[in-house]
Image (cartoon, rainbow, N blue to C red):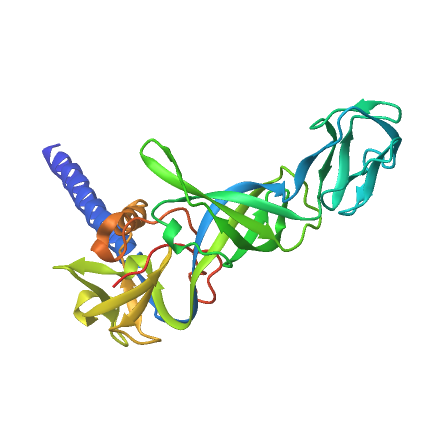
Length: 325
């Protein structure tokens, strides 16, 4: 009986040890398989700053009478009618100067009729130009110095997610508004085309603030810092990605966006660099927060709401950030 007990205990011990060994090997293999690398790419690198707003007309104004107590002879337009700047809208019985359209657009309201009398300053109609549109977005004070009149803008409208509109920055507010200790500045963007757009539609704008052709770049989380210097882990040709086959290379960085950073010195196109190991699902996010929150020291700083480039290289599609050293 004791013999069988010893055998049973032995089987259990062997099974437990075997399970522990298998689990350790599986865990080690899983971590090893999550070692990631990226190839140093060369191409067009863009930095964009984003903001949200809504579609608004450039022209939307009241039309007022400058005549006092004169009788209207004829109203020459109707609500909904398109007019051109300078068109006669209302004439008077005494031959006084007629009320004319101050701008191109559509008469959206008309509040007088023939035979009525008007007073000076009275609103008689309203004109809105739905073919000439703009949007205004709020930009953080940390980024406003990068925004200039004439910069190109790509715009996306929620109602038409597959269509991209274009425009240009027309004005940058000279004064900001503060909320909870953070100041923002209004930036007005004129749209190149108004096709299918309606006033009030929500819109996201990406303002191109920097662009460089033939730039070398790597994923943001490939950059490490130590003693005030930045470096990457370059993977040697034929290496199995283990530390014995890697080399630490000091680098200098330039432009940066949310996902990528330009390399101005230290590595070459086509080299392979190691990315942080993903031992857990949060590791990459933690690395990104560290880098974006000041991990680059004075060179980077925190970055706002921006996009990135295709992780496999190619042109950046939505980006934003600061320049490094």
